[in-house]
Image (cartoon, rainbow, N blue to C red; front, side, top):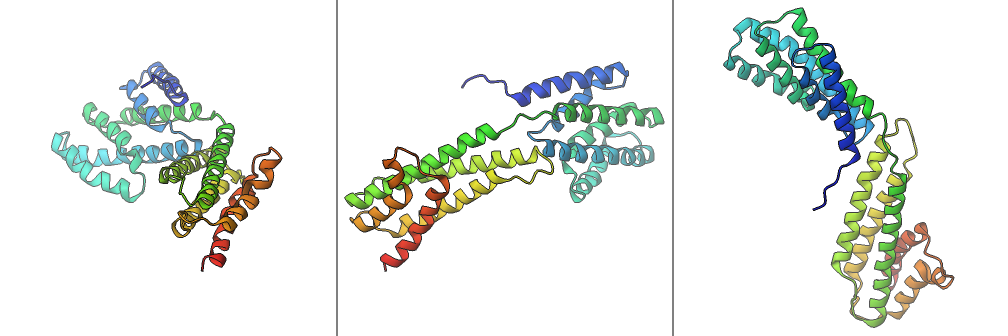
Length: 283
């Protein structure tokens, strides 16, 4: 296993250092705890980071009045912490801010450690939260574009479809199946990974309506499902020159002669047409 430092790791390290330095400069109590909030808020996309920051901020703000009611009302004792969490955690889940459970627990434990609740204590905890979240949001303003990586994955998936169709043609000509089930699983895995990456790229650009990569990979998933159905029905162990010629000429035959790769839309459309052809000729 190779040792690798990712870009998100670098951003987290920078944000943690900045948060601790800022909280320490302001002489906040438990200033190193701002790093915990920062680490949890640095996400893989701007949208995820904002959602995480929002949930953690509201959860932390909610933990302060809860701490006041429980600790000032029942005392600063360990069983009171347990009782507080029994009420507080289900409430955060109900409000759909449960991502902030860890950070808000840190805040209420700080208040417990103080042993009293004053305006200075409240401002201290709010300061830790604001600094921790701000540091994470600042480093997440920069997100490297994923277009090049997505384009490479698109080319890889197109090549996988081409390879699968060639195997289908050879199987139909020879009457000897030469494609492997593992090829389908591998292609499906590539599509799933590409869909995740495309979704992340879209989350990094607010208000952008261009979702061409998402649409392409969703279409590729549908076409792979159609190809699976085709392979389940067509008897590849029997020679079928007519079907083989049709698939070859439609999907890649003429373009291979010119030394050019198949066009993506044409290649994917071929799979749908194969199912239509199959329904007409294999009844």
